[in-house]
Length: 407
Figure 1 (cartoon, rainbow, N blue to C red):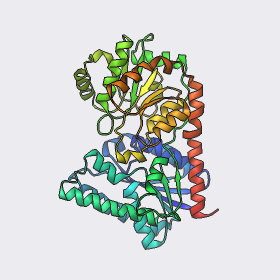
Figure 2 (cartoon, rainbow, N blue to C red):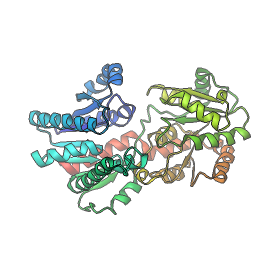
Figure 3 (tube, one colour):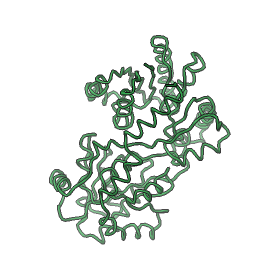
Figure 4 (cartoon, rainbow, N blue to C red):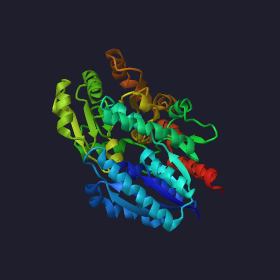
């Protein structure tokens, strides 16, 4: 049995932990891998969900070592967490003698690289995105500030080492892989494979008229009006104002249309931006949802929209929400310039991806609604399954593990 230390700065109690970490490890455990997770957890979520997460991990023999996530002061809190993370990883390596570290993201990779140098343990780099450039593009690291400029330079240097020293690299997108091949740290002898953020097809099941009816009753939505939905947080990468502008154009063509937000974000902010866009509050319904509720609420949708800033770092991004919505057979309006989104939307026939956010492009998207409503949910789901099925993702990880660890 191969022993693997899974290092993640994201928590298992985070939504991504529950959708993009735990299901994969459950699947991989069936191949005989013995996992120990090392993660950092937000205290409020941990207090609420600790027992539930153990219920997901314990039946698979997955050990979970966790520490509280620090937020203040900026930068220094992360340094403190890094020190704790490294000490914990070294202690666990001494105790368990892992065969490989599976490092999620750059913070995990820094520990995996250190353990490889210290103990010779294999280093599996699950990149998840161009993290340093994401921080820069989001404005979290203003490189005009000398401190953040040094932090950015540090992680770009580290990025090169992760790329050179890894025993295997996972990219979320083909676009990200192609970009990495242009970097000075690219070594063609280090294998790279692409695995997008997959969807659990047994959780995100095919929509139906009955499910739509029940969902609308639950949410208090009209049965005979168009419902446009958005899934996930707003702000940062997510272009709320442009989505509201598009919805206003859709509403003008479809009187009584409702914009459903399934989001943990603050409703008052969304309402404020909606009013600035010329919308009334009663045209929006905003609900927060846990993982179990998400597909129930999404089922109320006729069309789902999601706009993400098409900045450099987003070449490496695989929006989790896209796979989940397409798995339910719901058509999408998205934008190009984000990972493989445009190619996937075309391949699945599941909607449209606009090239820019001009008035003309948004108008064209609004005019596409009747055609989108004619698409076959079953056909969308079938095409999406070939890309996003969780079982396919687990198998690709298993094959990558075999290349690193042997049969």
